[in-house]
Amino acid sequence: LDPLPIEKMWGVGKVTKQALARLHIRTFKDLNRTPVEVLERAFGRHGVKMHLLSMGVDKRDVVTEHDVKSIGHEETFAEDILDSDAARRELLSLAYRVARRMRREGREGGTVTLKVKYSDFRLVTRSITLKDRTDDAQEIYMTACSLMEKTSAGRRPVRLLGISMSHFSAGSEAQLSLFSQKEQPGGKKELHAALDSIEEKFGKKGIRPGTLLKR
Image (tube, rainbow, N blue to C red):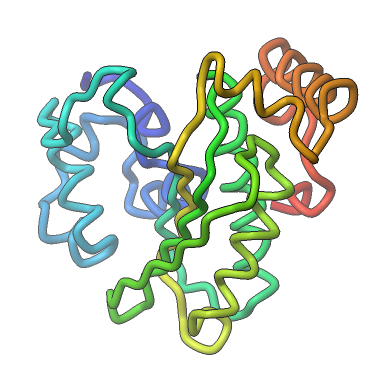
């Protein structure tokens, strides 16, 4: 593990990578050699988890494909997010990541959950069940923004944001959903397939929402 670049670690996104670079941490070996107290002071509990992962210790439960109850992504920020616009940009990025992963696994989710951790490490979650299951990033994003309005994000500094989807349909149930009121078969479904194909060929930055181009 030692020579691996730090961005290969689970849970290390662009912002966390930049924050680690400021501590001169660019590889698993660099992270392993950094005192855990320094990481905890900079990243909270996530810093402790990263330190364990750098040593090959992963305490997360191992689950099979059939055991998966939710699919989500979250981001811990090196600097607190102070306004709603910045928070919404992060939610858009998270929504696209979650949607891509669901489509890759052939799933549609019925419940959107938003996770918000404030700078004082107080954690809140808000959830809503959708009328129809979805794998559409824009729908997930808009729902997450609606849930965010029920939190203090934008009025209190935010250290972490996360979006997850649960209550999946798959297989025959997912096929039945194609004939729901959303009527996506020849529209969004094909567009999503095309975008996912482009991403596979050119990487995650092949096509991105305009709002994310400034990130």
